[in-house]
Length: 302
Image 1 (cartoon, rainbow, N blue to C red):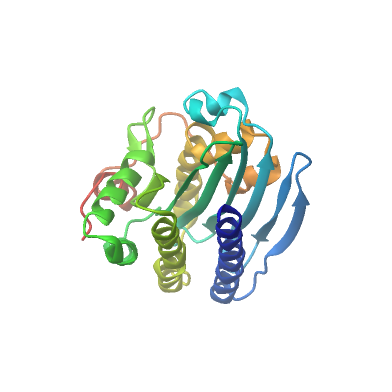
Image 2 (spheres, one colour; image 1 turned 90 degrees about the horizontal axis):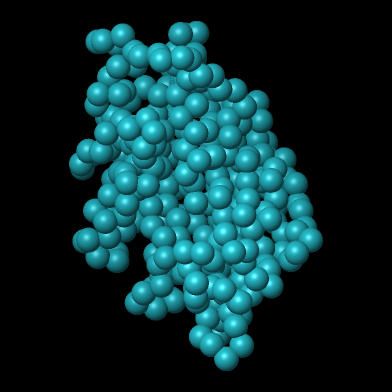
């Protein structure tokens, strides 16, 4: 049963990667994803797809990976002792889109499946994932659309799923050292293994399938808006928060590096250009200040 189920997850993820890449290429209009297929020496591999210098997308990556190993390193099992001594498989699709226009938000999505097995014992498995939005200039219409699609993806599985996963996202994408949210949230879930495999797989698929309907209309609305050099510099400054979160806190990044993952694919999420300014604060009453005051804090958008 496990082998059949694992293959079904793999085939879904490969198809999801294809669909997301095709949809983003169509909205960009010029850029094309370049595929880099790779093999992991310890087991498994993947295909990384990167679009650079498109008409809208300055840098975007949509990765599929399926890695295997005889055992997890101690750094990965310290908090999960039940995984010690088990072989494992981890597969997922992870993406980050960094548009050039500061009026188009950065977006991130990830759906993944993990299973660890040992002879004579039941497998340990779970699903995880979600998607979140990081605007540089806040537009309530866009954020409400994003959360409306997120709620619709959760609704078939119960009224409590969206509020719980939204709060989980708000709590997760938070930079304690800055006391800031990374963006306006969305959905986040992990360790999902109840009530049963089929239901959990369906929940993961619903989240994966919702990413494009959530993001593409926002990109379409904002990609032609004019922008200034000052707005561009603010975008590059805010991208620094993205880098800080991914390198210090992000579970996927840390797991990938700890488990000997492919560094180029793991760090694909980082933007091509970024800046840090010492002790910078936005001028009161500006759109930049509005981002901090109205958007970079947990809100009930719906």
